Image 1 (tube, rainbow, N blue to C red):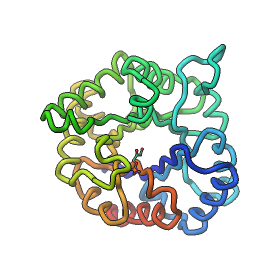
Image 2: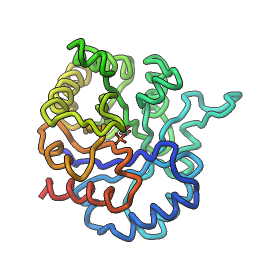
Image 3: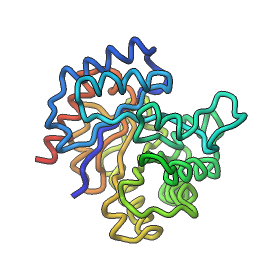
Image 4: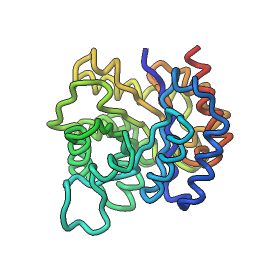
Length: 262
Ligand code: 13P
């Protein structure tokens, strides 16, 4: 049985003060026993990380903090970049890698994403888990080749990386045409690709490991569609953008994941 994950990706929203307020609202509406049933992750902008972590620690909430990006080199002349050690030091246990916005707007290639996944998985400090995002554009979806496209993204991101433990990796399937558009993939569409991702993981890492790795869906997930998505056998939670920016909707998504475990 895989423990579901509800992860909020705030993207480029919330100053430190706003992030603290939102985290406090989430915390105030959060029952401690939720995290027995679901792993909850908040991914704020990098400058908010420490403050968000501080609120969660003060309130003794077992909610994880994740970064939205990192660079693969350990240190040096990389103006504007943030290392794995830096996000770890700021309190992160997770890091989103290869989000379609990074790929499309900032030109991240499969090779760079592979380097980032490696830097996170092989980080020598505290365990740092990549949330590897994959997903096809509308053009690829309409061409019919989306399974091939997405599984190639997974293969490229994991090439040459040893995974020994299922907790070292989370995958998020985020069809680009469903992100921020209000046009969610149907549960069947999301399940089809998440199942294909799991078979691809089985080919790379073996069936036993693939059965344990969490595969999330992302793209206009909200209170109205969460139940039907989480019912799918290969969908183990969500990576949520818009609906994670309001405490009540984010907590309701966490509750939905708790309910589906009971
Ligand atoms: P939305 O939930 O706003 O569609 O964003 C999804 C996403 O990109 C999460 O990483």
